[in-house]
Amino acid sequence: MNLIFHTLDNGIRLVHYPLPGIVAYCGLVINTGSRDETPAELGMAHFLEHMLFKGTRKRKAYYVLSRLEDVGGELNAYTTKEETAVFASFLKDDYDRAIEILHDITFNSVLPEKEIEKEKGVVIEEINSYRDNPAELIFDDFEELIFAGQSIGHSILGTPETVRSFSRQSLLDFASRNYNTDQIVFCSAGNIPERKLIRLFKKYFENVPVNIRTFTRPEANSYKPCSVTRKIDTFQNHCIIGNVAYNLRDERRLGMFLLNNILGGQGLNSRLNLSLREKNGLAYIVESSYNPYWDTGAFSIYFGTESNHLEKSIGVAMGELARLRTEKLGSVQLSKAKNQIKGYLARGYENHESLMLSLGKSLLIFNRIEDLEETYRKIDRITSLELMEMANEVFDPGRLSILIYK
Image (cartoon, rainbow, N blue to C red; front, side, top):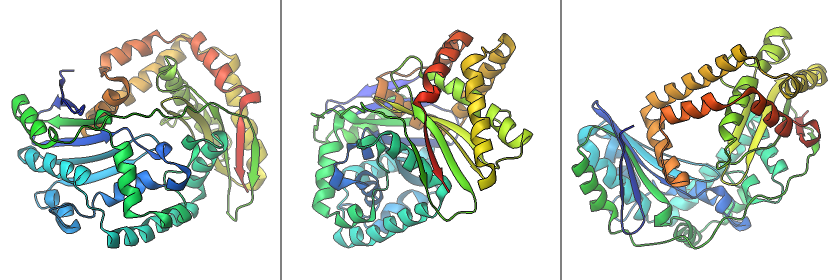
């Protein structure tokens, strides 16, 4: 992969992937998310992301939104537990316009008081709509369960009480503390000469004042398995079974992705989908997920089923976990599993917006970019014995937690 890198004196880094075509992508990835909030700030990273679009020193909210849309582009953003991203897709001739608006909203937002009060209502409605969807809410509740008392366990959205308490000054303080220049990457993918891109990068970001991070995140360091059942008025029972898992820096992370994909990943041929849905007709939605974080990770199985099928469904799911702990994959099974995940990775590389953000996140976390061929080689080196060892560690019945909505 032919990548271009550049670092400014203030610490902001650039990574660019030259890409043919008339559509281009760029964004800022900031190493700040909900886990960087104090108890009084729950939901603030996400709320601040919303407020970036509400006006700058030289633009009202309408003109922020129209800056790229007027020329057929799009401006967007997201917040996770560990990062905030603002990004754009646009025609390649509008690179200057796209980079300028990203700089403007990230470093010149004025956070108008009236807009803050309006946005509180919007975000509280977002929280309420989330609470009305148990199939989504249960994931947040589960991570709060397994990371009890730790910032990594809190919901990205916060609570209505914390959101109502936000002020303009508290948002400015949060941004000043967390939007550190050495924790920001500008990522790009598109058809632009290298010299022009670096010139634009310097033009808009070189004069951002130096703001080096002086704190370190408290590490997630405690986990106790538990089983919790909550009464909720739903047609289905919802169930999550899971455990803490490997962090982003763990060499076993890629093997865990492979193991998770075999168990309940994207494919309809995953073991959980075949056993719970296809063979037994117990569930419509069944999946497993693995989310690695900076210092920890979370693995979970989720399914929804009728109340009279709950115990049987749990038994089937536990049976699949037991198979992966006790039955080593054969060479043909392992080869198929590796080819499947390689295909998913290759398809992801063809989604250029997703690739652009992935490049930014990789540089932010690892200070390097691993190309697809290098990742393939690592996948090829994973053995059946290693997968079984991981399964015995992460899928150990004595280490699993269960959360049920009834």
